[in-house]
Length: 249
Image (tube, rainbow, N blue to C red):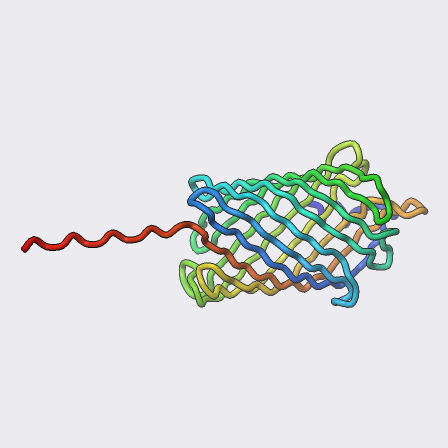
């Protein structure tokens, strides 16, 4: 829907094409059967690694529900730098609080994942002491297909694809209701039950929030090479197995 809408936009939109590299780490770590921690770091580089685009840290508390549901709430910090032919005026820092619901479901050999996320964002330009507040809603649909068998097991390859749309709302959004859309396709390898590596392509369609001085809105077409490492730790206490009852003499 956002791709079709932007393809029919009037002349006050300007396209800006960029080439990025994203290096990412994700981890969901079990503390108990229901509680856990989410950790995440993303190093995003512009102009094929030559310039900084963004550095993102995200952490959260996970709560597992039955039937493959996972609730998470936490904090993120994003430090962004100017890039592209129509860069932001200055670097910026953004504090985020987020809440999300993640659902997983099998569809034959394919594993589907839905993620619904709400973000409360405070953005501050470099050198400024004031922040602007924004709300954003995100929806992601991801499909994962094992290549070796009906289920994904260690030492196996898999394909994964997702699309995520970002919608802004609230008094400071103005005409930037559509924020961005991300579409990705990756090849992954599962080393163990805890670790996997994914390498692939991401297309990021971004509508910049601030228009140019001439009134045009810049729409970024960002072609991105991404590499993600997933490592999930299990800190649950392992119970000592009971000793067998000795046989009667």
